[in-house]
Image (tube, rainbow, N blue to C red):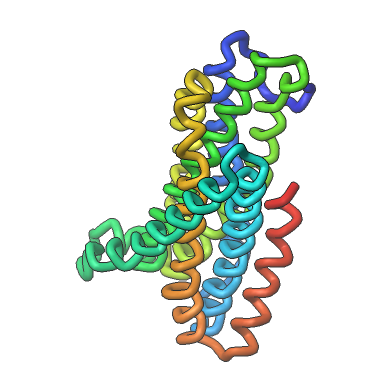
Length: 264
């Protein structure tokens, strides 16, 4: 399929390069955060609410939805749904554990450089959520060698994920920028959150059957962590800086804007 990706002879190398390009797209998604003025407390709250909306759209439409679809179409749908649910529960447990481990002071800490504890939590969670997406891309390239009907599947998945990485880059950048992080820091952080897509794509391409059993729990894990982060961190932070109407409006705006890109 002529989707503009490098035409490499080795599908594993192609999967890795596709993952890198998707990470660049995520980094570029951070740039719109610098068009906003965060000098007022209300702007900081709106940024957190908007990021929460973007994250919910990504979790539900890019992780939970495809996970349920894969489980129902599989040979053991109940087992698949259970794996998805258990993964989501484990992902939700991750956030309070991370929060208890984060440093609480010092201007030179990684937490401070990224714009605060919430920004660091978003960075960690979005990095983890990239792993199942990388597995999906790699599996797509690996499956291309098993039948003519699957040729081009890897390219298609890579392009789709690269496009929906753009709003995810904004998810990473908004809390960081609201906390005072620089343009370079936001871009690099957004790029790094999607780098696991390249790292996971290569081995998944080589061993599709080995990685297949972990796809559903991984999707659930990422979704659970993202949704818990929204409920426990981003929305309360937004409410601390602006009123309920502002939070609802900007949250809904983030969801509506992200939805068509995530489900492309």
